[in-house]
Each structure stands twice: as structure tokens, then as C-alpha cells.
Image 1 (spheres, rainbow, N blue to C red):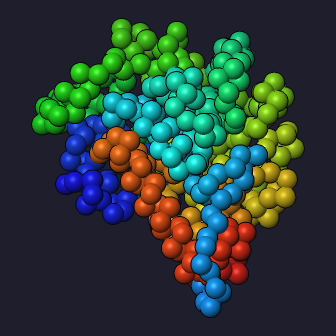
Image 2: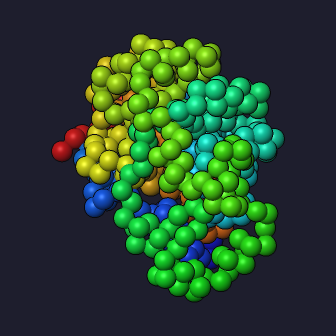
Length: 381
């Protein structure tokens, strides 16, 4: 399969599956438990229909938005995700370059494989640092200071991962970082020698944000042990309030779902929240960001910027979220599969397809700007 033959999310997913060893493909593709929430994320967009208006004289479309003080040329951004150089040797470099080309926001994870500083040099687009809260408060302050010095515009604290989800696909293959594959997993690597050659002929895999804390080379600390031993399971609203004050800038909570938590976030000075269930990878049976969007926007939308992610595969999905009041929409697997399939060229093609879809769909809706998308454009079944 060739990149030019990819026209949608499913094409990119197929191309990534052809290239990646099974354990790595399933790490991206899988969710928690029975993957009910993972499937529901995309299905939730089918709960309502778009109602277009015609004869509105729409010739030009302005799809720009401002979220958490950042001006984006399009209403989608590349959500921070972990371990990107495991999927393709370019990793976050490819995503940063694509975000710069399309004028949108991107993020680097605490478990990112390219440093905050290097990503900042690649792209002048707004950059998010996706942060995990550690038991070591000094380490938290040190990492925030580093992010501030690197020029990070938005701190994004993930709040739904105080323990890892039950990802049974990874258990079946033995997928872990560092690699500790079982026989089934090793066999799947053996039949994809192209990935192994790519992996072995480029620089050593590392986690620059955590180099002094998680040793990938010796296996002293695995990713699973990082979650269970270094992260603070008793993270509280008081801890977050202190962090918001210490950061003193744009601060977002990722993984909020309830109206009550959204109100808390606004009260302690957060400037944004992302309604997210971590791509269905944490609490299976959880509600979806799209299903909670209207209630949360009604409760706090005048005080805090509300975003959502999870299951977004089409421009029409984005339009539905914007119509309910989302300020922007996060993409995850939508760009990870093309990254795995073709590196920077893949991410750029996926973002270009999304840009074209949003522009075309806004014209078909009779909307020349994002502000014209309202709940009157939707009919719930």
C-alpha cells in the first residue's frame, strides 16, 4: 500500500498494520479491558446528525480558532502521545514539523522520545507539555522550570492515569518498554524486518524528559514500573491548585469528564480542560468526551476553554464537537497511524486531508467561520 492511496483514517491504519510488528501496532490500536469505550468514542458521533443551511454565499472559510490564548489555523491539534519514535524513527520531530506547516498546536509527552527543546526548535506553533504528576514534588518543579525555559506555551496535566489501564492486547504479546516480548511477540517482530532495520539503524531509543529517572538501556525502570512507582496515586485538587499557581500561565487538565470536576478546574484557575478517556485506554465503560461535551460547556464554557478528544476520524466529527461548544478537538491515533506508516510525509498527508474535509464540510454546512457552528446545526436522535 502506498501513501498516495491513503484517503482516510482506515487507509492509514491498514498501512501502519502492514509496516509495524504486531505488538507495536496493537499498542497503538488497543484499548482497556473489552475496548467498549474505545469503540464508543467514534460511535458517539453518530448519536446526532448535522443540519446544513444552504444558499449562504460561502466562498471563503475561516477555520481558525483561539484556544487557551493560542491562535490555531485549524480547529484540531495533535494531542501529546508517548513513545512516538517507537512507531517511526522521526517520532515527535515529524509531528512538530507537520504542526508548523498547518499552523496548529502539538504536544510532547513526559514519555516523549524527543526533547521539549528540540521539538521547540522544529516548530514555532504553540507547544503543549503533557505532564504526569510525580511523587517527588521537587522533580515536578524541576520539570516545570525546564518547560518554561524551553518556551512551552501550555502545561497539560494528565489526570486520568494515576494507574495504568488493563491493556490485554499488550499482555498477550508481552509488549513492554524495555522490550520483554513473549514468543508470540518475538515472532511478530521477525516477520516485519523492515521495522527492525529502521529501529536499529537510527539513534538509540530514549526518553529525554526522564533520562535521569527511567533508564531504557539497562532496564532498571520499565514504563509500567514508572507508572506504579514514580507517579503520585493520591494526586488531589490541592496538588493541582499548587501546580497551577506555580506554573503561572496557560494550564490545562486532560482527562476531566464530569461537570463537577470541570467546575473544580475553573475554580482553581485552569484555563482549559480536555474531555478525554485516554483513547479508551484507561477505564473501560467510561463515557466519551463527545457525550459529555454539551453538559460541561453549559456548566463552565464561559469560564474555561473546553476541548475534547477520542475517536475523531473525520471532519464531520470535528464540526459536531465544535457545534456543541468545543474550542478545539484533539487528534491521537488519527496522526499516529500515518506517522507509523510514513513518518512526516504521513502526518502531513493526514493533516491535509483533515483540513480539506473541514473546509469542504463547513461550506456544505453554510458556515464561513467556526463561530457560526452552533447546536442549531445538530439534531440528536
